[in-house]
Length: 210
Image (cartoon, rainbow, N blue to C red; front, side, top):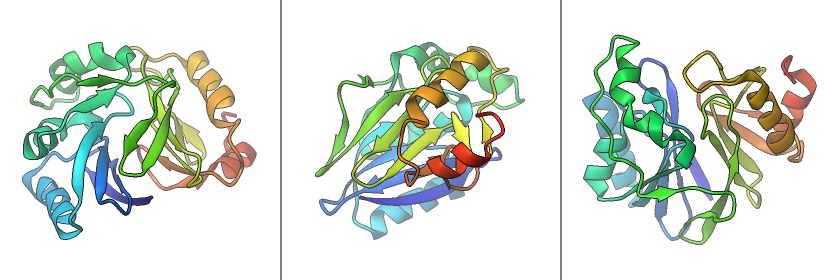
């Protein structure tokens, strides 16, 4: 499995494109807001002859779904997220207004993610780990064979997701991190929703919240 990260919009959301030898790909948290950002994403996909099959959202805060509508229309593909965040997605306009922004309403998810059914594309698969706390339906995406996890806004380098937004819960977030992420091997690389990559082992030793 291969991975490409883009840093999009004013909040510097990490948007990930994942693909394998079949050229099928998924786009995780498309945060592309401006036309130049949208064209960067489209150019990368075209130049690498990738075939998008699914949008996956780790959660439904507005900065992580800004590009959902564009990607869904451009490639005629559905989106997927945990059902716990569907109410947040339905209120993206209200979310963005809190930050003085106007965001077009993304389509509602065509698939609801659970831990029991992997996210599949090409010959690859990711396990959805339910990690509520930053939002009610937050998830992480774990690639066991490739030794990495996309942690969304659950875990960052030496930090954790904020819990002062609607639906946030600090105790729940810490419980998610301890029971779903800190049980992974130390060498698993962590690709977060903002900021630089880290690893489970590094966070186990250095994250002040854990």
